[in-house]
Length: 329
Length: 238
Image 1 (tube, chains in turn yellow, orange):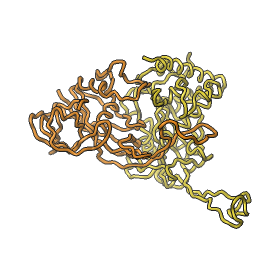
Image 2 (tube, chains in turn brown, yellow; image 1 turned 180 degrees about the vertical axis):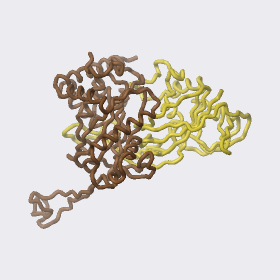
Image 3 (cartoon, one colour; image 1 turned 120 degrees about the horizontal axis):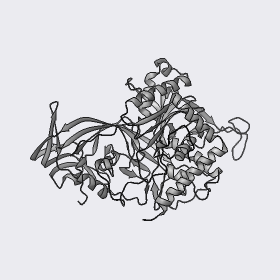
């Protein structure tokens, strides 16, 4: 049963193959920070020292959004939906605790369990790099935990002595709002429902980064999808191509970049980079992407649509599990 | 006719695999094993190179056992005369990353772990834009993919073939030195290995700055001579 009318079924497998068959779909996304997310290692924001552009060979420090820090929140969104529509019971499949091995999340995003085998992930995400340099993309905040009175000096609460000044104060770098991370999400060997499942996860995920904070709001703007028979350009190269296309004074200014301008240049950059690839690919970018995006959004925003997607994905996952996982040789 | 390709790899993401595990620190050495490269280049179980393996060992999304099948996979490459050398770094830098398992439960009680699975740790990884170099020796011409994925986290890397030596000169009984890393198991049966430095890593430690005696390929370009051992094949019984 085809769910989409705007796409030819030749892009998809009828069911999930047991080995790589050379079908790829690449989701071209711009991740835009909308509050102050944290992607850090040992209290420091993750960054990478790389070349600024393809033609601009200077090296700069960029913020980086590590791969699993992008894919984990996305798969958790999918899992939440599977539980909401009663396709996965919480006790049957718990993330990183006990994998059910027969639901869409486990089959599409993979799992590894010591003695029960492992399923390779069909979703591959790469580290994303900020377009603007690190210096212009972060801010340092002082964090404190004041007493209920709103001051840092104790009035004798709990075990403290009156007049004592709390040491609950710290400093932390945060990523600024409106920092752009171009990121390509690759799905191997898609079926129609696994394509929609991943698509929906990307559209719905709103928070990335440190789970204990409540500030990691990030919006995903999809610029297009590319169906291909192989891997395409990297996030790094795409980011560098966008950098080259933006005016120097905007990149070094403290003001955030304009979203319309970035989207335009990002689209231009990916289109030109795709011309250099020597693989077979069908691109849905810019205007060509709008009908597809609208169709997917209509589908995923109605209860009917989303349950259809999830049920089909679940059915495919169950069939796959029965055929290739449960059956002992 | 023997074809020799000199290839460059540029990392576009940080690369991680465990060369060494020191408690919670997992370290990546800037050298790529030739077994790993064979998989990354797509030479294993691929009808394009006639290296399909039997269904018991074929490459699947689901792996029931976590035991590598190097012998079953790489023997097919020997039959097709495809050999890949380990890659050395031309330039590289390292980065440190911490990782932890995500937990989706609202409330978690700390329990003693039942299984020996680390839930957090630090990885020393090779940074993006580091460059590597290796050789592919093949009986038939090969077209390489532009993008490949490497390491535990499938990091994207750009592959470029920088030189193609069509029918290189073959010389018998030579004594020569190879600065490139080699897999000792793959040369010690065809050559007399005189001197070498060891690079410790699983599954087979590699050697470099190797002085050996035997057959070799001689290639010259731009006043520079390149020498590689001939007859290298994958061997598994030491």
